[in-house]
Image (cartoon, rainbow, N blue to C red; front, side, top):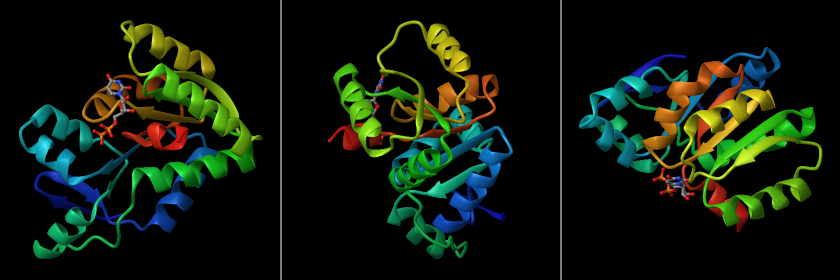
Length: 192
Ligand code: UDP
């Protein structure tokens, strides 16, 4: 897919449907993938942090999570097809994981939130395999990374907020042939 540069961040020209089909294919082929759904806050933060920008630009797919990015892209004459949010993508991938009995690891949010969310996931997606989970307030990052590796996940959803989640994914993504995606505050929403 072609890319367009918005203030230094390379966005992928991709629709919701295309991204989903691509990720399903990638997952079935056990590809290692990094998905970023970037909102305006992420782009502004990246402007002041070259290290973060370079990590974002190693993502396999970077989508516009926010109408501000779509509008900005149009003004810069580098239009992006549509808004592709982290939350919608997460829900679609959970459905896919359920249909295909894929293994999913959930990392992030407060301990009470993730426990509630896991209970809801079990009810709503009974065939999805919960490969493992951990709250997002840990001291020993290596231990968490080890737990993820042991879980052999097909999907790793990281809800540590930006920029933490992207730094974490950048450091550990090659430990599992999985689809890795930062999902911000999505676990709080899913926990209801
Ligand atoms: N979070 C976490 N560990 C941290 C900091 C944040 O697990 O050290 C979680 C927090 O509990 C929340 C999410 O990360 O579930 C951040 O949500 P927010 O809506 O702020 O995400 P953003 O839009 O900033 O990426």
